[in-house]
Length: 539
Image 1: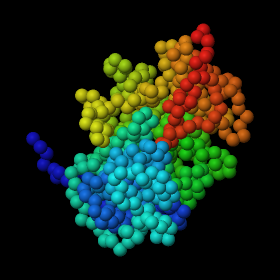
Image 2 (image 1 turned 90 degrees about the vertical axis):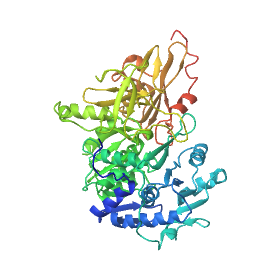
Image 3 (image 1 turned 60 degrees about the horizontal axis):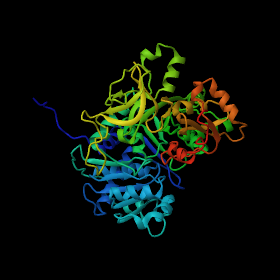
Image 4 (image 1 turned 45 degrees about the vertical axis):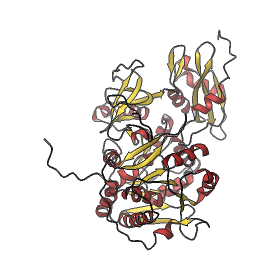
């Protein structure tokens, strides 16, 4: 027997239509690319989104066509998040930080017909333009006064167009966004989000057990809009009527502080690298945040010292875990009454050292290498599997499923899950260090080293060892002016990790990062592959 309720499909544009009706005057602020601060509200944004939709119609695009962006965190990029899927197009948010070969691959693989780009990314486009096989039209996201010659101008193209649209009713499983993995091994893989998956993700992300948004929040996404739709914030925030502040392309500490203070930002999110710069700036200037209350951090594990530094400033840190394949939120570190009963110190320690606890919509389990289910006791670690309505079923243009027959997707992470439902990543399968038949967690070693005075960033990777198969080495990037040597780091680590985990070598060098702000361990393994090869097998 079927229910007797209306079957209206879930649609991304309905999020903005709701916000424009229920929170019409709530501000949306944007720091443009070398432009003055731009201010509007949800009602005005819906009108501009409608104009952008008419503009896209005018490019001769058909339902299902792909449109690529090369853009930062601005209001124009945000508008395209609603305009393109609203009329049945698929928005591919290309990552300008990818190597050229991977960037070319993603745009060609998407077969995008239109490319919209920010003015300061023209050099990236012109470097690869001759190799883009399907792009017919290039539009600059700029005002007319600053648009470069030879490019269509977004503001000119939307000017004077109708500011309302009779939005088509789409099947909720219609494709909406195409996001690519970073391609650290092989070509990037396309993950095709649907209207249904995006809307359900937005509902769940705003819940109190997740990001806990309300209309009193002022949200500044410092995670890139091109990175898995900025962790879903453009949708979870709009559903809850938050004020948005888009920082453009400036993520240095001084720029972030200026915008946080001037716009009274209460909530932000981004990868650890961004917050390292922000905290360094506050330390140098002696400033303290006056409005910021919460920061979510993902992309890689949060160093405990970073969380403690924010806590001293009155800012709550929440770790999150997810991936492009999970739209991307999988878990968020929020407390529970059972955890709070253990006392504040134990509560914070748990939240700071775990990636997060299960949220509605995502099922999690862990299995050993033989496929056996492992207990959720916080001790047993195994391969993390997930499934849910916003989890990938298969990759774009790939016929075979990416899941097992029961619908479980292998995340590639090694994790524990405890009795309270908190999940902790101990390593990536490809990064876990197998030393003499035992596992060394590169993430836990990095977190331990991050607490050492003078250490800015630490990276750990496993390299070949003639006796132990693999042993850990560590790269340390020190704070400017820090007097720090290998023995200082080693002495600090001795009190934090098992003695046999201690890295065989510690190098002081810049830590390489991927295009999504994660430590590039593949590059480290390649670069330092032979440093232990000549070690005596008796060592």
